[in-house]
Amino acid sequence: MLYWLLYQKLFPYFRLFRIFRYLTFRTVFASLTALLIGLLIGPYVIEKLREFQIGQYIREEGPQSHQKKSGTPTMGGVLICISILVPTLMWSDLSNPYVWLVMLSTLAFGAIGFADDYIKVVHRQNQGLTARAKLGLQFIASGLVAAALVVMEIRGGYSTRLMVPFAKRFRPDLVWEWMGHIPHMHWLVFVPFVVFVMIVIAGASNAVNLTDGLDGLAIGCTIIAAGALTVLTYVSGHVVFSDYLELQRMPMVSELTVFCGSMVGASIGFLWYNAHPAEIFMGDVGSLALGGAIGTVAVVIKQELLLPFIGGVFILEALSVMLQVGSYKLRNGKRIFKMAPLHHHFELMGWSESKVIARFWILALVFALFALTTLKLR
Image (cartoon, rainbow, N blue to C red; front, side, top):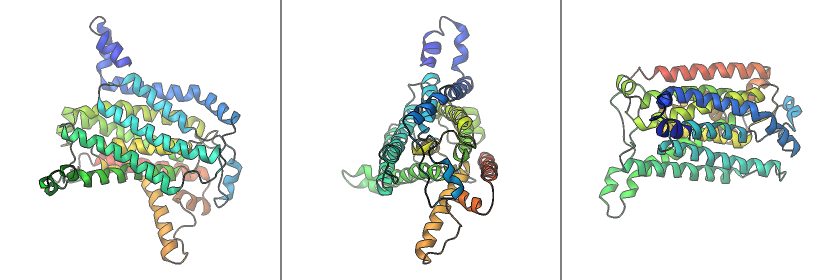
C-alpha cells in the first residue's frame, strides 16, 4: 500500500520518494515494521489470551520439567501472522502475484493451525484435529499452491525445473512429457511437480511444528532460516547476482524479499516474549504458518533441494520423530532416542533447556551458512 502510494502515485510530484523504489530499503523497513508490531501489540495479545484462558496443555508423557509451563498463553502465532502480513501489505508491490501466493499460503496454513489450537484449547480436546485431518488439509493447501504455480508456468512466469545444489547444468524437469501426447489429458504432465510441491510445503510446515517444543527454539531457528531465505530471494531476483551465481533468473520473485524480511522482523518480535521462560507460545497457528511460508518461498525461488540446509534443525527434528516411530513399530517397541523430537532426547540426557536451545540455534546457523555457500559452489 505504501509502495503504491508513495512511489507509484506521489513520486512524480515528490522526487524524495524515489527511495521507495529500492527493494533493500523496503525490506529493511518491512522488517522493522514487523518487529515494532510484534513488540507493541505483544502485551495486549498475551493479556487477551490470559483473559480468555487460552493456555497451553502439556502432555503427561513429555519431560516432567515442562509441567510447570501448563497454562502459559498459547496461539501466539496470531501475533506472528499479523506481524508478517501487515508489513508485507504495506511495503511490497501488491501487483506481484508471488507476493499474494506466499501470503495466502501463510494464511491457509495458519488457519489449519488455528483450527487445531481452537479445538484443543477452547473445546478442551487435547488431541485437536486428527493427524489424518491435519495432514489432509495441509496437502490441500500445498496442492493449491502447486496448482497456482502450474498456471504461472503455463503463462511463462515460472519453471518446473529443479535447481540442484553443486550441479550447474543438471536441472531436471518435474513433468511427464509423454503424457502430453494423450488427448484431453495434457494436465497430467504436471502431476510429479504437484506431488513434489505438496510434499515439500507440507513437510516444512510439519517440521517447524515438531521443533516447537522448547521456549524460543522454533522461533529462533525461524529467524535464521528466514534470514537465509531473504538473501536467497534477493539474489534470485537480481539480474547481476543471478547471472554471476548462475541461478535461474526470476526477476518477479525479488519482491518476496520484503515478505522474508517481514518474517525475520516478526520472528524477532515474537522471540522477545517467547524467550525462556516464555510468556507466550506460538501454538500450531504459528508453527504451521511459519513452516508453510518457508516451504512456499523455497518452492517459488527454486531452492527446494536446499531447504534441508536452510532449515536444517527442522529437518533433524522431523527425522528424529520418523526414526523413533519407525523403530518402535518395526523393532517391537525398541526406541532410538530417549524421547522424540530430538530436543527432548538431549533434555533427558541432562542438558538444561537453555543449553539445548542455544546449541540448536548454533546448529541452525551453521546449516544456513552452508546453504548460502552452495550458491557459489555450483
